[in-house]
Amino acid sequence: MASTHQQLAQAAVSELSLSRRLAMVAIGYIPLLHLSGTLSLVALPLAGFAPMWLIALSPAALYLIPPLVVRVTLLFWPLTDGRYALSDPQFLRWWFTAQWQVLFNRLPMFEELLRIVPAFYSLWLRVWGAKVGGLVYWSPGCIVLDRPLIRVGSRVVVGAAARLHSHLIMQSASGKTSLVLGVIEIGNDALIGGLSLVLPGVVVRDGQQTRGARPAAPFSEFVDGKCIRHKGWLEDEEH
Image (tube, rainbow, N blue to C red):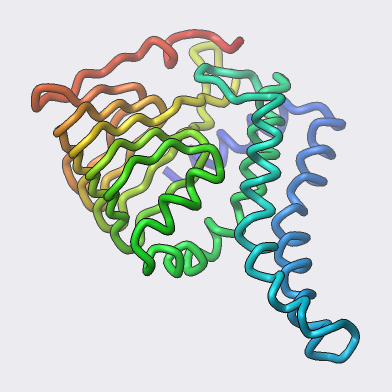
């Protein structure tokens, strides 16, 4: 399995132009700059190089700047469901939005702090552009990788360590590596089983549930107690 992932990564890199690689590397510094800027708002006042009131701005720098930047970006250049070649502008747009989320993916404690306050985490997801209903319970350890690309109804329970991934990097039938994007939709009163993996384009209808500790195939639909697979986007060639 490790060798397969390594081969896929090598194939993906070989398909990128030099300018695209350099752009991805440059954008990849966003998490570091974000963290450094946030820490400087605390470190500089404590060291006597800035007024102490700047410390109060650090939570806003940490939690609000990334979703607002992503929200504005998607207002002009939205991400849409589909399959895209790595050379497609849509890929670089997704990469830009993803890097603004990396800090929270690598340091999930920041999100866990928000989940301590009821409804606060759902409110934060809405700032990213997600649609989240009321009374949603986010269990400890759950992970949302593409925060703007989820639609969650009301009275939903997301089980412990469940993962919502609205993107995949995979090879097409022709052997080219591509990005697959698909909004995840979870209906009212649904249950996402603990340790489950929900992949791009999955739709969980009202009152349905995913089985714990199992992956939900991309673009599958949970309805009437069954899981129906829709492979349309996976079979298409890149845009």
